[in-house]
Amino acid sequence: MDLSAIFFLLAVLILVGMYLYAPFTGRSNRTSTTQEEHEVSGLMAERDRMINALQELDFDFKLGKIPEEDYPTQRAELLKKGADILRKLDELRPAAVSAANAEDRLEKAVAARRADAAVATRAAVTDDDIESQLSARRKQRKEKSAGFCPRCGQPVLVSDRFCPSCGKSLA
Image (cartoon, rainbow, N blue to C red; front, top):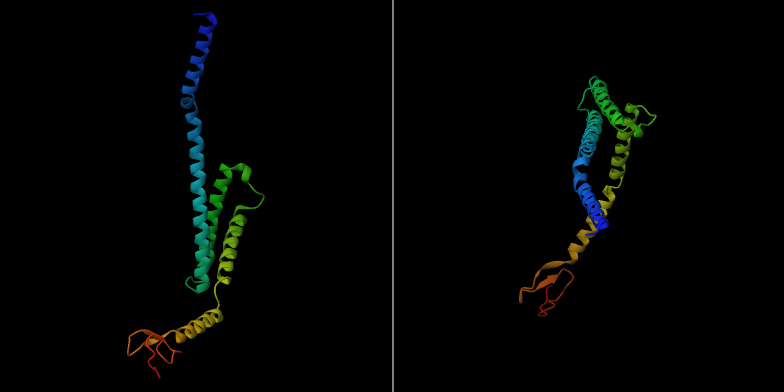
């Protein structure tokens, strides 16, 4: 064997060894980012739960299920919890920090969800639309089957004066 072939073989073995050893060295970085991503994901889920709780509290207050003296304290507690969650999120993701206060951002998120819900209810069918659909359906049903021919047993329509199958008078 030539000396250059030995050096080439040695270089290839070193490269293969580094390639095989690379997953063992990079594992600690992946777990720390994975834990951070997991924590951010959990905080985002808590934030969504707080927004839903605020929406439910507002809805229940409008329906009169919550007394007027309890509503402000319950709302303030939920806002405080939501603001704490947003602060924790800001600590984990400092690049995403906006100039707005955490409570203001929470209020904006609740308002945005309310707007989405209001659009969905506006798209609902009105009573007049339902009535017109019912009257059209009743009109179609009147033109449909009126029973069966007494002679042959074939179905007949209300508008038929004679059986279309056997010709018996239906009047």
